[in-house]
Structure formats: C-alpha cells, structure tokens
Length: 443
Image (tube, rainbow, N blue to C red; front, top):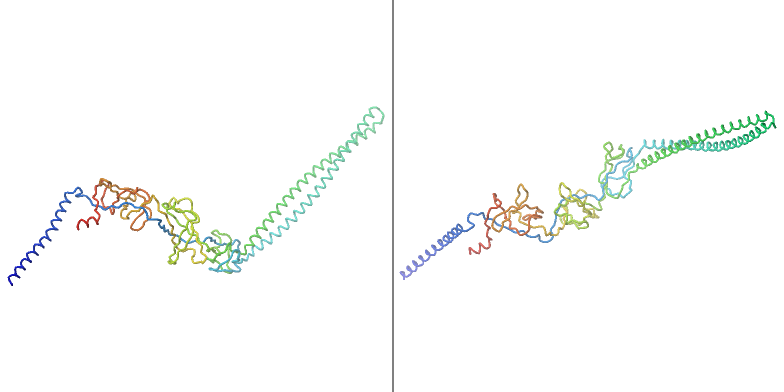
C-alpha cells in the first residue's frame, strides 16, 4: 500500500509540473504571436489615436448668463433752487408715493428777487397804460387835424373860384381892380392855410407812429416782466422737493440746515435723495452672438439669486437692443421681473437662465477634441485613408466634458480625441480599437 501511494504522488507531481509549464508558456507564445502580427501589420509604426463622431444636442439646453438686478425706475433728485433745507421728511428705506414732499427749502434771496420782479411788473404795466393813453390822444388829435385839413381845402376851393370870377369881371371892366385884388389875396391866404393844415396832419401822423412804437415797447417790457415773475414763481415752487414716482428712498444726501446750490453740474450740491421703484425689476444681460436667434421678446427667463437657493424667479424678456455690440459680439437684452414681495433688491448679482432649443447647425464633441492654435480653435479629423486634417471650428457653450461646435463641422467627421503633440496635417494614424472588442478578443 505505501508503494501504491508513492506512485500516485509522483504521477500527481508530474501532472502539476506539466500544467504549470503549459500555463507559463502558452501566454508567452500568444504574446509573441501578437507582437509578430503587430510588427507585420499595415499600421505598424503609426500613432494610435481614439476617435469620436459629433452628435446632436439632446433636447433644449439652458443658457446661463451673469447679470445685475436694477430698479425699473431710478432717479437722483437735485434741488432746482438754491437756499437752505428747512425740513427733511424722509430717510433711507422710506417708501414714498408719487408727489410726496421729501424736503422743504428756504429761499430768502429768491423771495426778494420775486418781490422786486413784481414791483418792476407793476411799473411796466403803468408805463404801458400811459403810453396807450398818449397814443389814444394822438389818434384823436390826428382825426381833428384831418378834419381841419378838409375844411381848409374846401375854403381854398371856394376862394379859388371867387378869385377867378372876379378876375374875369375885372377884365370886362365891370368891377374895380381893388375888388379883384382882394379876392386874389383871399385865395392866397386860403391856400397857405391848407398847406399849414397838411403839415399839421403829417406831424400828427408821425407822432401817432412814435406813440404806437412806444406802446409796443411798453407791452414788450410788460411781457418780459411777467416772464421774469413767472420764472421766479416757478423757482419758488421748487421749495417743495417732491417724489417723481412711487418708490423707496435709497440715498439721503442732505439734512436740515444744509446750504444747497441748484442744478446738477460740477458746481451744484450732490443729490439730496435717490429714489428707486422696485415693484418691478429689470435685468440687462449680454447674450452671445451664437444664441441671439433663440432670444425673442416675450420669452420666459428664469432668474437665479445665490441668496435664494431654493427659489427660482420667473421673468420675461422685455426687449433687445436690436444690434450687437461690435466689441463683445453680444446682444443687450432686458428682462423684467415682478418683485411684489420686495424680496429682491437693486444691485444684487443674479444669473439669468434661458431655454435654448437645439439647433440643426450645432454639434457636440468631447472637450478633449478641441485644439487651440494660433489660427484659433481647431479639431483633428481622420480621413478614410487614415490621414489627419486640422479643421477650424467656432465654439459654442462649454458643457464641461463636451463642447458645442456652432460652425465648421458637417457631422460626418471622425475626430481625434486628445490629439498627441506634434501631429501634423497629412500624417497617417492608426485607430484605437474599442475596448469592448479587445476584451472579447482576450477572452
């Protein structure tokens, strides 16, 4: 029995030894065969690359752009008249209605100017009344002078006829020469009277014209005085600084007793208040040229604010600029958002999300397929004969592991993923076999 066990043990040992030899030799023979096949293959010595084909975007995508929240209306309120702040009725954070008095300004110098202007207006009106009275009297005198002229002309005509008749009688020696001389003298006197009356009428007409001009000048003085009074009265009305619209006071730049200068220039006082209407907010976003076609007025836009991570605010595209900024190639777009609960404030940072439908012209490729060169963004395409070609492309959005290509591809290309350095146009490459196929081959 011991001999039998010894024989069986030797047999088992030999069997194990043969099995170990087979296990060690067969893989080596297989590896050697593969190395020989690889060395004799047509692709021996070529750079091996992996490729991917462009694909379409999967449904609508989100376009997220940074922005700042602004009030729908905002205004800096300056004093329209110079003086001292007598009373201030509001402070920052106060909500006001349209027309509410925010501050009262004392204007002693303006008040004095207005009193002087009113006195000057009274004087010009008195001067106008006097000029009109003189003009009326001159017109009456002119009418009287014209009547006297007509009477003188009538007398002159009668004296002329009488003188002619007496001259004929004198020639017929029917009357004495003295009688005829008297009539001729009377005619000469009548003619002189007519000439004097004519000169008087002309003088009266000149006087009427001068007085009429005086009336016009007096009226102009009255109009100027009235305009000055109206101007000063309007300035005096600016003693009450009122809210132009309903809103909230965001800045207060004055206090009671402060000296202020009217206007809004460099020499004027800073704004007394700043008011903002925040029941509706507006957000300006610069949309890249690639997505301009997807942006239309009336379209919904979602607003994300970091301080409200669990809340999405929904607004509407109100308008667009209608032209791109030639520097940034972006379209200025205004989004309006209701803010009835006053949760949002002007000046907040926000992100605006637009839903962008997929485009037939946009392709998605792996981000590692993009090569940045001096000529711009490019991809490496593998032709049917195994040679490569660099293609210029225009990038769209960066989706993380993938990138949108908006132009430069037809969709049929085989693109090299992670192209090796030094790869040039026209070089032949070998395509990496799919890992699944290699695993099946090894099995």
